[in-house]
Length: 421
Ligand SMILES: C[N+](C)(C)CCCC[C@H](N)C(=O)O
Ligand SMILES: O=C(O)CCC(=O)C(=O)O
Ligand SMILES: [Fe+2]
Image (cartoon, rainbow, N blue to C red; front, side, top):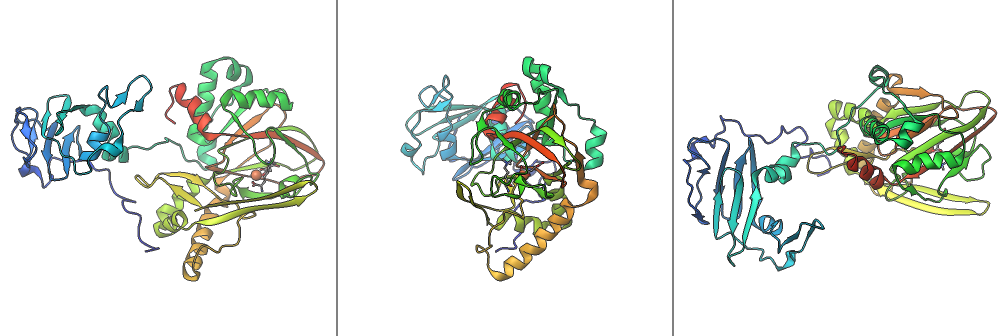
């Protein structure tokens, strides 16, 4: 069980070609409403290959825009967009799904050039635009990614010459904010330049994008190497690449850093695209990728320093993928904060260590590392679900401020500006 390939990991999108072996089943067009018992192909126009459908005992099969879709009858009843089933003002379902007979079947089905019509046993009629069905069907979704991204190594990122946005245009124009967010969504990092080097100004910049996520570290935090908290971040030591708050059930979505002061040497910031590294693992060793996406483990934060007493535990795999299309959406990688592994039997744990090693080797390739020196005025936003950060050891006084953002609200802002997020 543990080692089974992810179903459809390499599956090509479910598109129907003309040479499909079902071809002989595609029967000529029939415009009449057909009783639900009919199990043969119907076309919307003679010879039309654009749209055809067939009723089966427990589902409707529909071919449209080169996509073969299968719809469960309860699904078709549940998503009815008629005024009594769906409130178009609030975009909310009014239908009580629990009142739908699980054995429901349409009494009659008809398809014209644009629309599917279903008549239910109680006489209720449901209509679906064929375009809507392609967009909203499982098969349609499977062919799409949720989040378009450009995976990068040092070379790819440098070649792309992604511009930083100027603070004024970021704060005052929608175009500035949109350009910033587009880069952030594509690369998982983005910079704002010419921010006044104070905590208050950093907060204004952060709040332009999202709500601040308050955590055990506060809302807006300052930190320096004073060991005021029981964590290596509050020292001058180097920090290897990691994502933050892996010990939360939902790790923070975005991290904002703004270096307010550094009088000394070292202290450069390291950035690595975790999804680029994970993709290399998927190519080289799909079984290892799968293991990393299936084996749940704990990360933990235990703190007892001064007045700070905290014990946080987060559970989840290193790689988190959407089950319907295997798209990676979250990497939890922090070897400092990884807890005792007690959720995995011994033979699996050994294979997990091997998989973790493969991923670590990719994450540590020098050609995947982006080193930047954060300076006062330059605020950095990091997608903490994707891009790992670290830092070089340093000397002297160094002060960083920043905050975490709630991911939902960053994506909300992006969608309102018309971006796919
Ligand atoms: C950013 N700030 C200094 C507030 C907190 C640092 C948290 C460090 C912790 N080891 C983690 O990786 O989550
Ligand atoms: O000091 C730094 O540059 C980053 C430290 C760190 O990893 C963190 O605060 O999350
Ligand atoms: Fe960190």
